[in-house]
Length: 138
Image 1 (cartoon, rainbow, N blue to C red):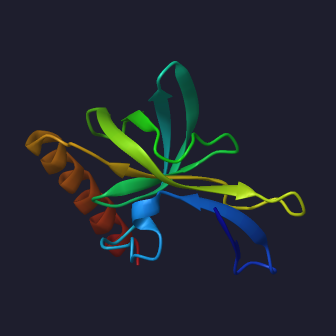
Image 2: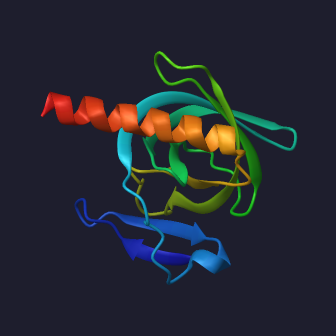
Image 3: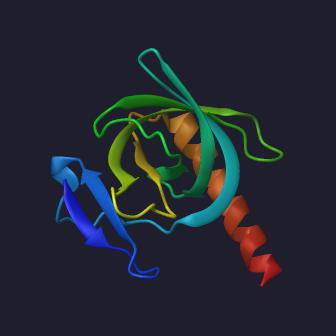
């Protein structure tokens, strides 16, 4: 676990990361902002939360009750106008509030794992749609 100072008003958060991700550049794909509901299932735990951004490799799930780093999860979400997704993932990092200050960005970064070629293709299509709509709005 390591602490860092966030960019908003000196906000201090505590972020836990999977050992293999520490010190490495994690952002290898463009992230796109979104507001989709997501069901996260891990072992016998069920969490209803929101996806606030997505890339080809993973999502950020905004929640004050994140799973532990390393937890395997099943992610179920349905982008507007598309068939629902049910994708496997692994919690790569967790952003929690510290005892002194509440984080405005609580949640967990989840990396997609073991995607089928069909799921990867559908994910690419969904992200291309987001990118197109974002560019059209600008």
